[in-house]
Image: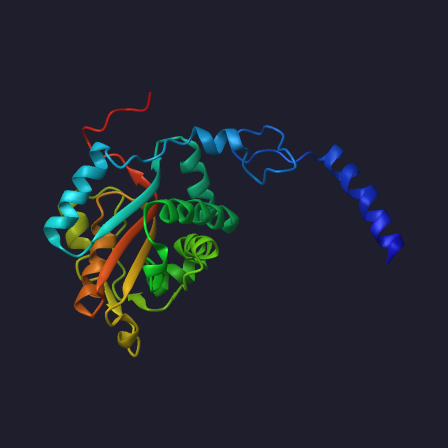
Amino acid sequence: MKTLSLLQAWITPFKEFCFPPLCFSCNARLTTRESRVCNSCWNSMRRVQRDDYTVRILRERFAADGFIDEFYSKYYFEERGVFQKLVHSLKYEAITVFGIELGRRLGELLIEEMDVGTIGIIIPIPLHRMKLRERGYNQSESICRGISQITARPVDMKLIQRCKNTLSQTHLTADERRHNVGDAFEVTVGKESALHASTVLVVDDVMTTGSTIESVAKILKESGAAKVIAASSALAMLGGEAPPK
């Protein structure tokens, strides 16, 4: 055992000398306190502020519809930015460690902004079974796990299911998005009692118009949830949002 420890103590620095740990985004050498992505890249991502134009518009929209009581997002989704690279790798290359870290950072935001002890259940936006079979995992689940690590609130991956294999929302208008996901979700049979008078945190990777997460919130409210809070790692800027300085 002692020999093995001595060998590892020699191999590790040699390995790092030959193959230094580099930032996934910018290729800068990572410090011993950094993992996968350097602090400079994390700090370069523009953070969502509560009085931003996009936040105000979505809050007004959610309040008018009455299904989402509050929502929180950590970063803005910017084309060719660091977040886009991270979430693309999470979504299509199964690098779920990025999802966990994004979830942890979102969880820290939630602790700053609300009483997380009131959250009864954390749930991800579900994928349709065909999409899940094709991809092999749901990227929002790893974000939920990261939030749970920070907030100590339970995650239920199976409370809601996607019963309709919807079109991609990427190139749809706001009205088309709303229609596309309008009847796409349902509460899993036998899970209804878990929602009674509870506060549910619904999590997605990126929120654009909010149509998908609002469709889930509607089902949750109709099934007995007292309060629905929406959360996403990133938020897409609506027209009129000032560009980053």
